[in-house]
Length: 257
Image 1: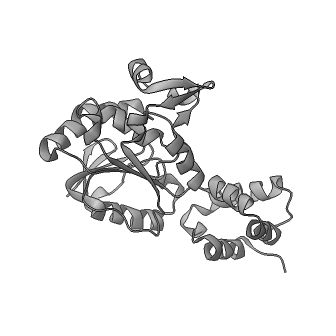
Image 2: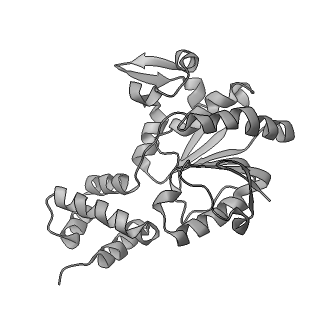
Image 3: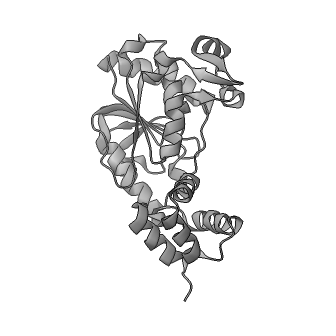
């Protein structure tokens, strides 16, 4: 008897600890069905066997389903609000900040944040925790090497100051890299860091089910310091923020109540 998608989800949960039921089903099933077909397998069971037998295939599968899309200073207008209004207020209140960039993908977001914070603080005072579930994306982030297209939204003075050409690509300044600690983290299952003054969790919630979102928003609230700020993606405004203990601060920024 051939496997259903439900059978495949249960097997993947047992194998990897990743619960595909927490992702929007229609979208995720379509992506996986397409991947199985392109890879030349006739169904979920034969593809699963291939994942069990070949770690490289499993790593590619995990990289594929975690949907890594990132760029420096994504949605620049929101970064302007962060620079002009959010950061000055947090720095005035707290001095040194504990900051977490969740679902950081290949590192563009936390590195953008370091470049922004460097306008206010010396680099040796900047420390950011950056996490993602995808080991391959984290490896790229730690290397800090990007193509020219990734740099399009970075102000030119920052490109000249913090990047060096490297074999047709661009390597970020080691001093910027030293400000970020990258770790693997699963938003659904792992404990969250505590007492964060600022959390960036952007452009990842759109992939989760409503039940998963509720769980994550509550955990994000708990992870924030009193009056801490959550910065979300441009398609992820929280419809009833008070339900999770947040109050709107600016578009896409929420303060812990």
